[in-house]
Each structure stands twice: as C-alpha cells, then as structure tokens.
Image 1 (spheres, rainbow, N blue to C red):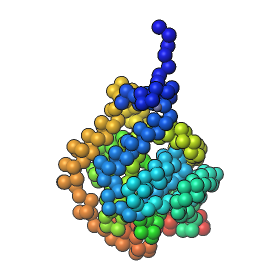
Image 2 (cartoon, protein in one colour):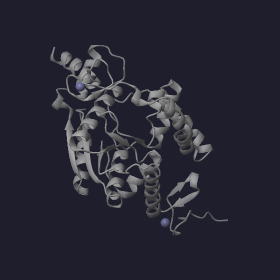
Image 3 (tube, rainbow, N blue to C red):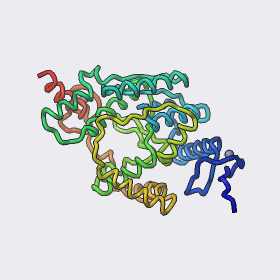
Image 4 (tube, helix red, strand yellow):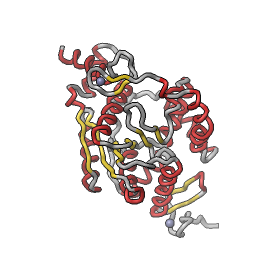
Length: 321
Ligand SMILES: [Zn+2]
Ligand SMILES: [Zn+2]
C-alpha cells in the first residue's frame, strides 16, 4: 500500500501538525483555530478575565510572551478588556536590546499601548547584579535575582497603570516544572499560588497565565505558523548545566510520549484535586504584609525592606565602590 500523507481532520488538506493526545492531524489554518480554542477554553474555565477591565501583558519578546500578546489582543473584543503591554529593559547586553526591539514592533503593529520599564532608572542593571555576584561570591543563581526584579517591576507597573491583572506567557511545561519541583522541595507556600490565575491580594496585582495549558511546542508551531517574530537567542546568563527542574521536565516529557495527555492531566489533577485542599489549610493571607520603608511597595519581609530594595542597595554599594 502506498504511503498516504496525513490529511487535516477538518478540511482534508495536507496536515502539518499532529496533536497526539487528541489524535488529530491538522493543517496550519485548523491548527491555529485549535490552539486559540484551547486558550479560550482555559480563559473561560478558569475565569481568567472575569471582572477584569484592564490587562497588562508582560512581553519579553520570547515565543511564549509573543503568543500571549497576540491571543490576548485577538480576544480583547470578545471579553471587553483593555490591553496594555509592558517590557522590562533588564540591561542584559545584546539580549535586552533584541527583546525590546521585537516587543516594540509588535505593540506598534497591533496598536497596543505599552511601557518600557528600564531597570537602569533604579540605578543598576542585571549586568551589575552579575558583577556583584562575582565580587561577593554569591552562589544563588542570577535567575532568582532576575525573578525578584521582574516580579517587582511588573507589579509596580500594574498598580501604576491601574491594571487588574498581569498576564504572562507561562506555558504548560512551565507549570509542570513548577508543580513538580515545588512538590519535590515541599514548598507548599509556593504551590498554593500555582495555576492559571493568582488573585490580587495585599497590594499585589493579580496574575493570569492564559497559555498555562498549551505546551511550549504548540506555542512554537503557533507563532511560526502566524509568522510572528520572536527572540531566538537564549539569555546569556541562563545556566549552562541543566538543573533538577529541567531534568524533571525531561522525564515527564518521556511519559508524555508514552501516555499522550500526561502533562495536562498532571497539572489539572493538581489544580482540581490537590490545590483546593492545600489552599484550605494554607492561606497566603495569614502571612503578615508590611510596606517597604524605602519604596512603599508591599512586602512580606518583617524588617520592612522589600527584596528589590535590598538587592538594589547591595548591588549599588558594590558597583560604586
Ligand atoms: Zn484544515
Ligand atoms: Zn522597597
């Protein structure tokens, strides 16, 4: 029997993508439709934009955030929210210039109002953090300091522009990684915050992750099919060795090959069964919230200096010395 090329299940045209867990072959047009329907279903099922008037989408220029910007812009009339974008200039040589160029070009193409927030306006860059780490022989990975900086600036921008939620491009693989490693490390406090939505509380803006149930591979096909530009370069500071998080994801990806749909099942069963029980016995609200005595932003540090201000002071001491 001659080999027959796979055909799109919807229209019979040549297919290019196989959704293994749904046993579907799809042509580019129907793949895009399928992808957007899945994202829309997640937005509906997890009530991501219910009561939300203004969404601030964080765009780093990577494929995930580019996809998030594109779909959220496409859906804004359906849900009636206003969309704004924010890109943080972390001051990472070459990498930051590339991401800002791409983000800006997309905001302008889609007519989305946007903010470019420069970390250097606060007196330091991520390059300075790297220098400080070397000088002080700090072993904590740079990504965790980058996380502090991004969380702080995104939250601050959201509050300043009156956004109800910050949307990020976190995908299914990210959620699988976070759930598995927080579980492995017993970080219940972090686990209860995971999911497609973190409601606003204690002066922190809400967070939504509309791509939380689509995989990185699906997102890659999506942005490529639409011909959207994105940053291909890896962050020059990202660690060279694979860490435990990545190893766990590799193993779970092996399971996905054997049992298509494993990753979605893993995350959904956490969200629907484990998380509600954990949230009952562990409430984030129980923790004290203070105002940072330096910048006035909320912090859980009882010495009343937020993590961002601490980092800023330590780094500036070193680089000005
Ligand atoms: Zn088709
Ligand atoms: Zn502060």
